[in-house]
Image 1 (tube, protein in one colour):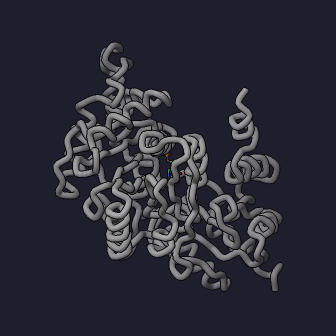
Image 2 (cartoon, helix red, strand yellow):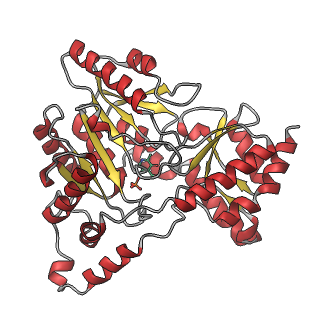
Length: 392
Ligand code: PLP
């Protein structure tokens, strides 16, 4: 067998491991006594419109409901998505710029596979979603980690520039960000775009942004999520409805290859080829129908806005240090000792499940997923207080 695959399968991620521990612990001492902030499983119910469209789809003749779609997805679904994007971002995308996938994970993996050859490099901004490294390395490439700016976790453009080599094919940008909850400002992205254009010119080859945006609609307060292809032409967009419509188990998303991107047609066909190689063809038909029917449904962020306030008020009161989250549903909190894993283990002693930052490529922090029932946040106050007291 392939040893690397064995290792990946045998060693669950620290996040999954903590989540599994939480399930076990809840069975032992009661769910209300465990404060599980481990996973990014949306806590807002999916819009009614999704179930409604799926119910209607169930009435279709079986040959329509259960058949294969074209490998890149049904034309009418891709058309509905292109129309939605064009209305919102003033663009002119066509269905042929879209490749439907099983979630953002498959979209990212397909883009990475499509853009690279073994030996190439892809830059990830640390802290980052851990699966980036898995996909990059599976493509035979090197995952080059560049820390985000220490002061505010925006992109550190000079550091990114210093990491570019002739082997750099792409940089993955994730805003709103998992795990920090930052939203990159337009100025920050413009600075990145100007730097990349200059580097492309020097190298005589495109450097793509892979814009990983499953949290696109989840932004709070004044935060504005920029449409990255409007800032930098050579951008591929990876999206899913896992977070915005709370459909993570349904596995539906897409790759967008905007026509203005360098070699757009060839890149799109390479994405189709990568989808073929990886087996990511023909996203689930009923989900394609659901998305075609309700792609314009507004996203409900109110519960996350409330949770964010509950959590930040509590942490302020207890005197924890954290990065104010502007989007997604994660809060990035400073660990009270340099070893984040030891701090997460200590939290576990108080039935508090928070993920050590080591999983995301940096030390010294923890991620708190606040996509939970508000009672989990209010109920966790004593546990957070006791954890703080352990270090005083
Ligand atoms: N990218 C980021 C930053 C994520 O947080 C996730 C899921 O948590 C994904 C990609 C994968 O999303 P999906 O569940 O749609 O495959």
